[in-house]
Length: 86
Image (cartoon, rainbow, N blue to C red):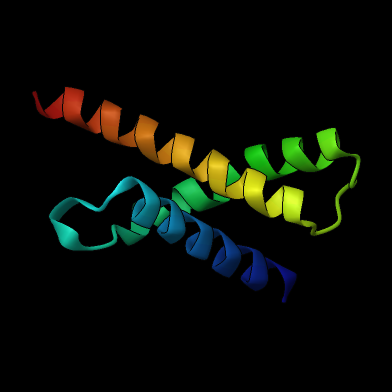
């Protein structure tokens, strides 16, 4: 059950990152939302929670770190994709 919750949380965070950055063709790219949400949540959320001293509990610092991490992953993904297409 925890795995399903983490996957859903990652997808929501990834979709939020795409809404903040801007969506290509006006729609959410769900595979990118999934990957950027999970990777961003793991890296950004974990680092923010540990730096803030919250440990591994779900706190606002971890959620904010997750969104920032997902935004960074989304921007890197788009940069790499645009260079491959050019």
